[in-house]
Image (cartoon, rainbow, N blue to C red; front, side, top):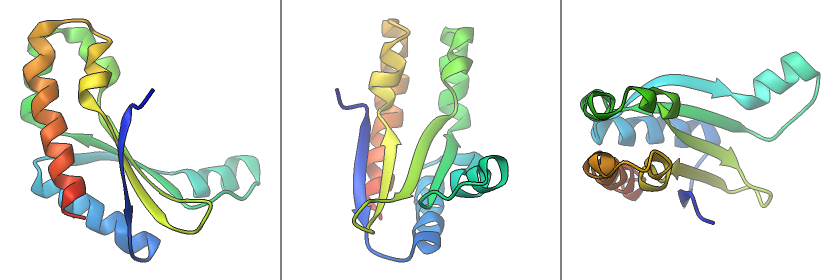
Length: 128
């Protein structure tokens, strides 16, 4: 079952993260959180892990529309975008599929929000 949209991106890891943040901002998303999994595992578990960042992306207008329909939607926000180093050393950017994510709410009134968010993520990944 596919629940993300992925793209391999040429470049150094930190530069790809910056480029991803810029592309998301151009598509109307702000970054509410930036979790560095590698640093967290090193600090909390004293273990090494590949480069892996989770960016919590949110478009305030879409979030407001969704929350106006269903207050419980907040449990699914923000939408996550991950940037990680693959096993073969490539950098991969992967965004949640908002249509699949919001599909768990089983509310047709959220379809337009999900479609808009999906189009914005597609545009952002296409710009990388």
